[in-house]
Image: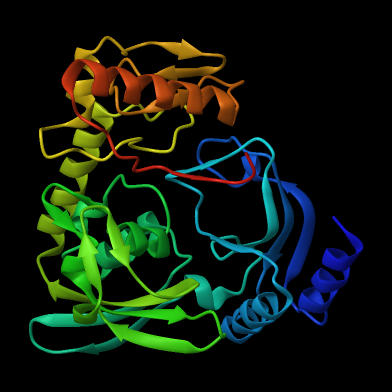
Length: 313
């Protein structure tokens, strides 16, 4: 880190109430358990502090990366320059993981949830309260913020179906609530013009708690039956193309069980790459390139990444 960057970093970090870590291995903060160090990792105390960090980093030209639960993410082996902001960690302020009932009527209930809350915890809350609409997230790893940004989905439903509004902080540090109808959502992506999603207002329906529990249980069983959940991974590597399921295309070109270093294409679900315990990002990227090359050469189809790859090459 140059002296200019050091001085700029000191200005950004000065006076923070939240915890700060230096050269923190990203392998500790991703579901892949892979990744080089974050130059600086910050755990903001609240929204106001996060807004201040974003505004100061912009002024000092320090790059920022906002981290949720670390799923659907591959961090390169040289790590991430600048500041990584963690919203899901217990070291960050509670406001990023809170659930607040907002309003309800005879059939609907609106709840606000912080972006850092794990989808599994949010789902448990809605089951407990007898609220339906979010059962499709059962078995999807990650945080609410990541799910909103990725428009995560399963079983024919997506996050856009239950969003009323999204709370963001823009590059100037301004906090804004954007109506979901004003956001362009596509398959496994959304166009949200902000540096950080800090929460969302969800619109759910009141339902029968026993039926909700059964739906969640069935969804979890289907996930466990079809996906490799015993070894570190980042979920689906590629989006499903128009032509069909990505895993079928990958399987058809003979990539099932192929290895590169400590990484392996799952035998159970070929759109998953697993960390066998010693994989690094280079191993995973090698397999990603092999898969993409084979599918394009043999099937004439270009696969698009669903997993996000970040960090210094």
